[in-house]
Length: 220
Image 1 (cartoon, rainbow, N blue to C red):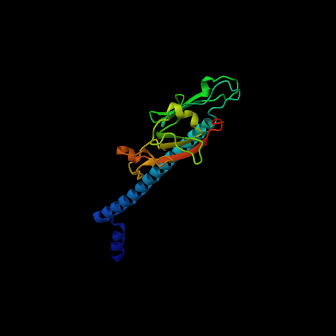
Image 2: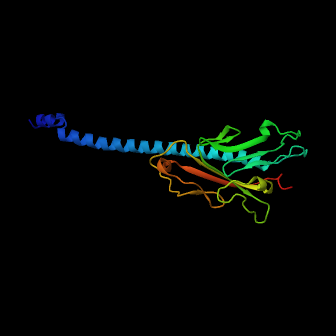
Image 3: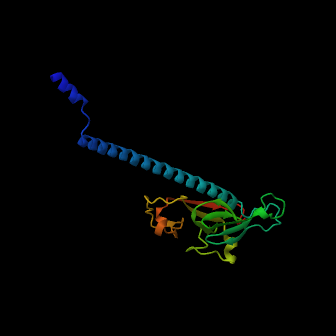
């Protein structure tokens, strides 16, 4: 009789309470797994966005720095190459890079930002750009800025330019609502404000690059 009762107990199913507890524990466990998965995915996508932004910014800066350094290149002395426009957010210059005595279409170069893209003669070389700033310096020691206060250099002062401080601010391609940019204002090398995050724009990660370019062919 005892063996029969023991067998019946062993064959007895789970109670409703036991099932509810098991379901609750499983739900908590699955929720934790899902939360960790979402967090990992978000982190991976964030790192990819930042990595893409940094590559994009460094490539654009390298390209721009190399060409600005050659502004005014005129090996034959026949082209009158030099800086044409020296604005705070736009720079146009020429250089006879191939040394043929003429300024070709691709040797008359303009850098600016259009629709959040850094463009060279209208062609995008850097995406998701929040700010582009140029500060033009003369040949004094120490050099003086020729366009203080985010202004443009007057035509009469353009011949005095010998170097250029270039500042580029890039952002990620997508916003991250779980991130808030705490930087109050991004500044150029003169400590002047060039961009202030606001509104939905605070949810983008950003990278600022600044460099000083000596124009080797100017002021000779």
